[in-house]
Length: 384
Image (cartoon, rainbow, N blue to C red; front, top):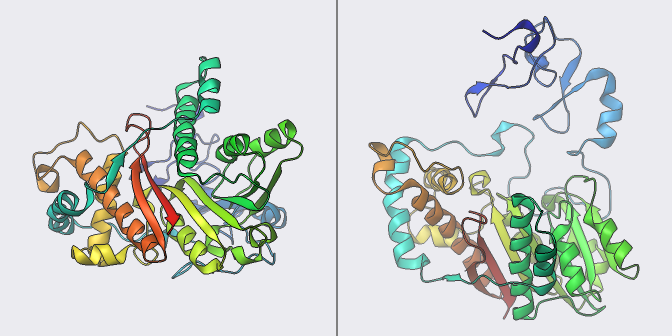
């Protein structure tokens, strides 16, 4: 029996179907974030910018100025410029979950689609970069997570170098979507210090690699813009407009953000000569926003029910569900983890075909082994 001083929050998380693990103050039923569900609550409210978090009513004005979900006013921001249905501010952002019957209907299509149209397009090619490998060799004390990120960056840089896509002159530019702390841009700029670098991320970030990059190379041209890719009008970014060659990159860009990113390249009217895209979190993809409908149509999976099943099955490639009960239902038809990997590959082939329809030549590459990252598929698109 839990003691009064260590009582957990009583709120049941809707998706995980379990109680919140945060501790609560003596005499309270809910933690600070979930106290809005307490009938006696008078202090907290749902954030007007994003229904996923709550704030103190007394701090509303201050919070709205710094909230990561706020949309700032700027010339390069055009609401829903690269979205089909646009952003939502509540839990309906991700489409509904598939039923058992819908999953069973799609499982065989996933298996056959992969065998017929997908596996022959996949290339296993792990590359490396000397600069990053030197960093790894000199810092053997790095934790496993940091080493895995650097191994991925090493292979990414290797693929950019071998394809001749690095921004090597002052007239070329690299645009990173969902830059986060900017570690990928940091290493690319070390390999190609004469190019221009534009970083985009929807949220603010502390301890950014931008600072280290500029400190190590004061002449480096690197700028950061705060905006969700769904709302970013790239034609308004001067550094991009003034470039003769533009490389777009993203590493682990979640769900439908990848689709909005591809759409932003198409909508910009700018000279994107190459793109290196590493999508992730396929379970967060939305049917309306996904761009690979042409390929799904061929395999009769281009409807919301089939897409919900495809998205759900894809999650089994990354959620660690190896020792699960496979004695009944759709899990008994084929190994769930292998099905998940195949579902992810199908979604990437759809995106690659979409890129080909707007003038790119594409490759889908397994750029690191699954043990480094299960999100290990890279789309390399070069303008034909």
